[in-house]
Length: 110
Image (cartoon, rainbow, N blue to C red; front, side, top):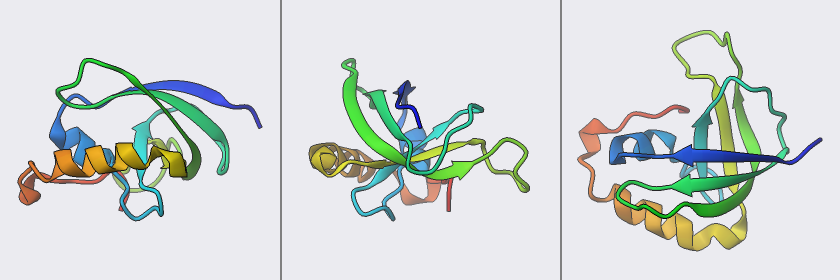
């Protein structure tokens, strides 16, 4: 299994909320993609969060796969379980999400 390097720009709070996967132990991010990935595959992201110009390096493993052609209205993509050392990113994301009205949140996953 090869390691993949990806780029993910979350331009607004609503998209961040839809991408955030708090149910994973270290938190996670859903990345829409039509590319094939495997559970457990290591990925590295260059991530930009809403209101931030800087892209930050983030690492994790694929913990969720929504393949192309999945039934329902699911967006194809992968859920990336953040590595334990990404805890400061989790804190930052959760702080950003407290600013969003709860009724505007949707999810790419559950």
